Amino acid sequence: MPKSRPLPRGVAIVGAGMSKFGAFPDKNGRDLFVEAYKDMRRSVDKEFDPSAIESFYLGNFSSDLFEHQGHTAPLLADAVGLTPIPAARVENACASGATALRQGIMAIASGMYDVVLVGGAEKMTNLPTADVTDTLATAADVPFEIAAGFTFPGFYAAISTAYMAKYGMTPEHLMNVAIKNHDNGALNPNAQFGVTIQKWMEGRIVSAIKKGKPAPTWENIWDFLHDDRANPMIAWPLRLFDCSPITDGASAVLLVSEERAKEFSDHPIHIIGSGQASDVALHDRADLTSLSAAKLASSQAYEMAGVTANDIRIAEVHDCFTIAEVVASEDIGFFAPGDGFKAAEDGVTARGGAKPINTSGGLKSKGHPVGASGVAQAVEIWKQMRGEGGARQVPGDVPLALTHNVGATGSTCVVHIYERRD
Amino acid sequence: MTDTTTIRPFTAASFDQYLAEEKLMASRCMDCGALHLPPRAICPECYSENLEWTETSGKGKLVGFTVVVIVPTFMAEQGFGRNNPYVSGIVELDEGVKISARIIDVDVTKPEEIKIGTPLTVEFVSFGEGDNAKTYLAFKA
Image (cartoon, rainbow over all chains, first blue to last red; front, top):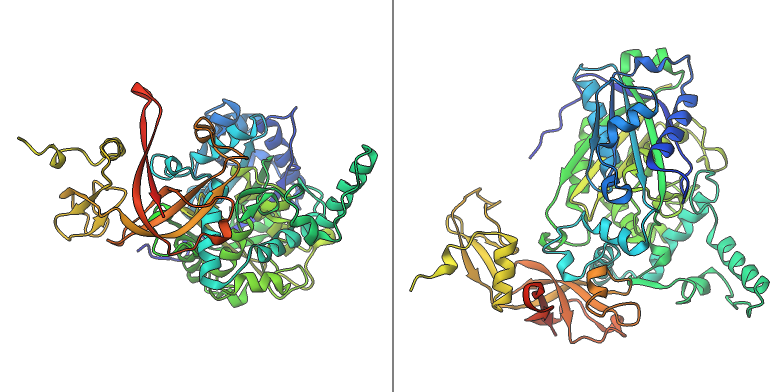
């Protein structure tokens, strides 16, 4: 079992930015990364000379299949003028971003570099949906899991059925997660679907009337979410609104050694815990209702940081599907096993609740450009901890926060803990 | 006659070849006795490289499942789709090991009536002809 040793040298975030997330036919992954980098650059409080950057780590899942472009890291470094610094791409499926962040942290903690750029980028919408599904499927154990007909919604649907049988949850409970994340995403100008489900439903009614079609008669959003035409089944019991979308987007953070943080930032955000673990294929696990790699990565990060789940004010977790947020909220220790869906129902994870989760809108509403998501989680934490969350800012101080990024069904999980000290 | 089953490598190709022969085969560690399905070439319990093929009972129970409505390309090629969904599941065999498989002979129109814990028996489903023929692992209720 890996030991959790303290970082030999402290690491801080001094800049964080992202592109808008969405579907952009005229932008490739490189263009989106340039946008994220520029946004990051503007977020650095003090004069910042990019020539100070010594190394670059990129989270990217599959530019090869999505864009027919490999060898992505030096290309993106070049696009922002950073050659000849070393650049490396990290691939861990949907956890590529947080894995890249961890490489950056280790590069600084080791003493090798003082200033490191970490990015994430994914351009997914070039392909038709069926090809995107097939590309995402390569993150699973292809000969054994995919041959059984599983898709990614299918895997998380199977987790849902096991969870429902064990804890008495219903598919309706999962809708609370989607409603809450759309409420948050509606306040995030970078979100792909920055609209509440209420507004979405009203938009559908207006559009039907404009087209001269009979106006749908949904009484409320629950009615809307139960309508097979408005919210079609993808993989029972998961419907369209249980699934994160196909997204183009990029994200970037600037990491520096703790002792140099004030050269760059008035309010640096320190990374005080990092954990990462791997796991077997979903079918090989003793229990389908929890990701053991997420629990292990969390315990490593908590131990390194010297804090507990009770101390964490907010978290960004990997809600690729609504059930994934429920499970994540338990795996990171916010709630006991079987209590996660009740916490979502009771509003505990809403912005005004005791344990806000996914204030950004999460993958569900903000969008999920696979390799960019893990780094974009850190971008939201940076904003919230510095009080720059705008309309979606949580009340009160955020002295400690956590991110949880998952690859596939939890074959990779990466957890980071962040601290604001001033 | 030589028993070729003992010398097949512990690969996905061997597993598929056994499926084509209508056998669901696992690998067993000859040092610690742990059973592995899908088969493994190295035992993760004791790190032994000393394994043997063993045929499973083919009997088990359902531990998780889904009805796939939006189907992947290769399943669409087999005639499945929005109007003809199918069930994928995770099956725990009586021996305690688990595997992903198609679940057949269940009512895809009533997923809420498919119960976790349902007893299942192995089936082998073939698709394609000639060099493209492939046998898929399935279980039926």
